[in-house]
Image 1: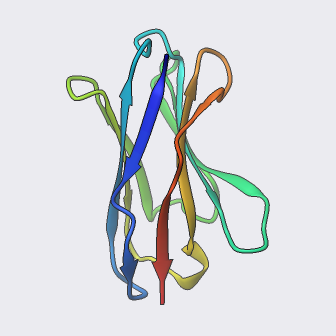
Image 2: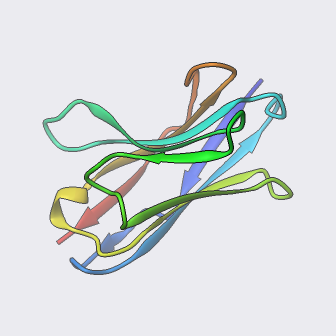
Amino acid sequence: HVQLVESGGDSVQAGGSLRLSCALSGYTYSMQCLGWFRQRPGKEREGVAAIYTGDDKAYYADSVKGRFTISQDNAKNTVYLQMTSLKSEDTALYYCATGLSDFFYWGQGTQVTVS
């Protein structure tokens, strides 16, 4: 049973930084993709950043390139999203997700509010 628990969401001022964490547990060692998504008020859920273990490369949405960084600590079974230069439009519920070939397992989300 795979579980993901996000943390680190907070209310910050524009221009500030936050680091989100996603702790993974369960049958996760074979997961091929790790990602962060967000749902902004009144919007569809969208992809923010992802890592695919097959090519060990990070992918970012255009709106966050240069400001957000996804990383993982295999020893801690944790995925991070470092967010800098935050903007009001980054306000959203942020989710992490993982899976074998697609994002099948999801966490409950952590709220980020930028004012």
